[in-house]
Length: 136
Image (cartoon, rainbow, N blue to C red; front, side):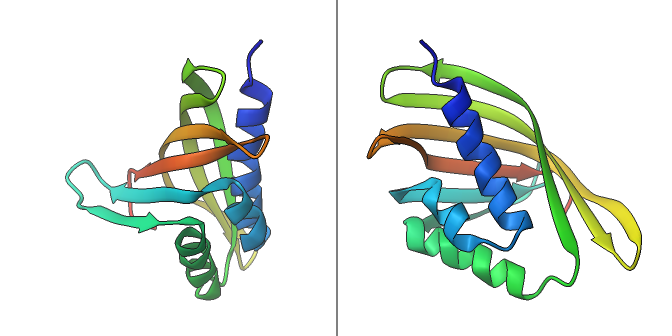
């Protein structure tokens, strides 16, 4: 039996948490010793790693403080690359929208490459690499 629904929910809860300014919800989707990296553009340098749930929570909290718009992370085309009883690998597309001053625009697109572990009965992100096509 596949854990796809639980894994997809973790991906979507992290996106929802960002969009709703709920950094605790974001942090809950990551394992205690998780790592997050980011790359912008094919030739861009890797940003991070941000190591540990609290560092990932702080990264998101700091990002949210400076934003004046409403972000919407649209995650689609989730692919389960590999899955076992206690680990999984996924790929998912990302379209990042911004709503501000009555206008909506696409800020960037890209993908998430996630490694999941079963942790405390829940599927949590152990590593996340975010690739964005454009800076935002």
